[in-house]
Amino acid sequence: MSGEIEVTGLSFAYTGGPPVLHQVDLKVATGSRLAVLGANGSGKSTLLRCLSGALRPTGGQIVIGGNELSHTRAGLREHRHRLQLITQDPDDQLFSASVREDVSFGPVNQGLTDDEVRARCDEALDLLAATHLAERPTHQLSFGERKRVAIAGAVAMRPSVLVLDEPTAGLDPAAGQEATAALDRLHAAGTTLVMATHDVDLALAWADEIAVLTAGSVTQGAPAVLLDDDHTLATARLRRPWVLAVAARLGLPPDTVRDEASLLAALSPGA
Ligand SMILES: Nc1ncnc2c1ncn2[C@@H]1O[C@H](COP(=O)(O)OP(=O)(O)OP(=O)(O)O)[C@@H](O)[C@H]1O
View 1 (cartoon, protein in one colour):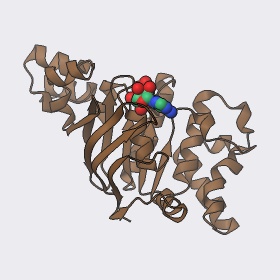
View 2: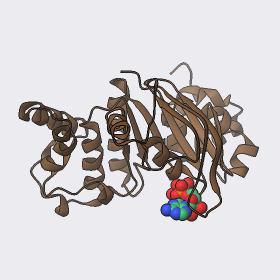
View 3: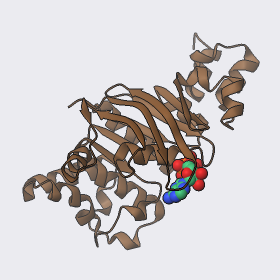
View 4: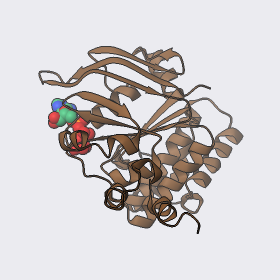
């Protein structure tokens, strides 16, 4: 199933409020990874919630895998099979007594058989390295474990697009790396991934493209270009990723480095 995202002329304002998104265009190829960056209040969560169908845009079009998002009951139901949103706060998404029940919720609603539901649940928990949590009551889980289970619940729906709002926020460094490793496994399986984040180092290391939100507009492009551009960084209140700052000091081209490993390789090419 195609996971291509095509957003055209998307506008949104909360009732009685100023425009948050103004004529936003966005294109994400099937299976690629987009990081959405921007200052606090720039509209990242609003954009993601428009993509998920939770908010109804005041203008524009959202097309996923060739299907235009329709806000009818049937349209939204179909849309949820294609695209799943994981919100910042896992407690928005967990409401069953046990982890297994929670992760099974979507597949049960999809009308799958008991065997299929169990297989989907096991597969999703395995992908999130959360199999050991399966029989735990959700209310006893730590914040990081709840985040992991919330992602597993979305993965169990086998969407072609997964949209994550700050999936690594509030996680310790190891849990953050485990979360990105799980996203790498989903990427390898062909899922289109969109992630809002404040972590410029992660965006550079992880994303194929980035979208920077400023004053309701989006600039989309290559991470090594936009995250090395003084004007973009200043207007979006972003910091230059540390590897790009080091690369500039050493005179290395920015598109040769994206993380610590590639920086070290660029410093000793023969090693
Ligand atoms: N339910 C709401 N009603 C009215 N205004 C809202 C609502 N939710 C968000 N806003 C406003 O919309 C704007 C964009 O908010 P949004 O949460 O999308 O930004 P964000 O980029 O995700 O921010 P952060 O980085 O702080 O999470 C802000 O000015 C915010 O105050």
